[in-house]
Length: 292
Image 1 (tube, rainbow, N blue to C red):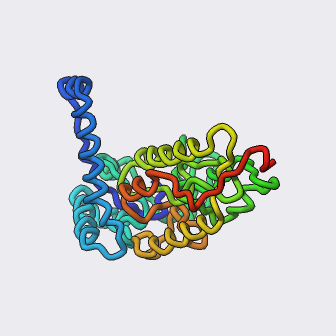
Image 2: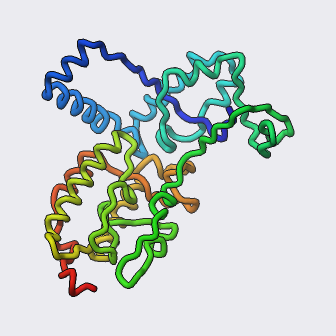
Image 3: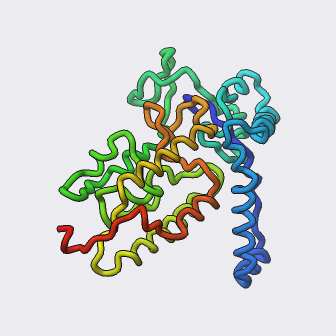
């Protein structure tokens, strides 16, 4: 394993569901609903404080995760390689029960010398040592900006979305961009979350988008006001300053200049409540024909 930066890897503590458990879930919608909400409030209520810039809970959680690693990894040199030097949560937290045990195997090495080049039959690190390989798995993170600008989307007067965003993507409630009427994003800028499932955030976005669709009817164009977009994102960026992601580490959460356009700085329950209904003072509705 060629490692650029060590991660915090929390135990998954996975469990198996018996046939009896599965049958109970199949019979009872209430059981399914209660189980889902139980998981949601466990993460949104208990885990979210970990991502605050100043968090006693994160201090305790860091000790637990590092002690978990040290209890499995016996080699002190390997322990040092696997110990992060940044705040827990500043980069994505990984969850696994078998990652650390795999690194203990005699046929597994953790290389931290950096990669110089990929050769015809392996990898050469920056010390000049060659590591033969039949298969290479590239796992270096994500580029969300490329995802959001992969389509040629044009708004009023043909202006391109890539021109509007460039390296600073911003949207109203993560769903709308001024000058692009009736265009909505489900996982737009600052809709990501570190403490619960993105599926919950998507559901909240869909609920909001459906409210907008009702407003448009059959013949209206719904656009968001530029000042609403600016005010929304000014608040988002201010609030992100109080989160662990602003403590100095680099990650795919942020652009090269440190701008965080991926994550939402509050609980997922607040995200949902903000999207329960359309705020009419922030939008404009025009006739479709008049806008051509």
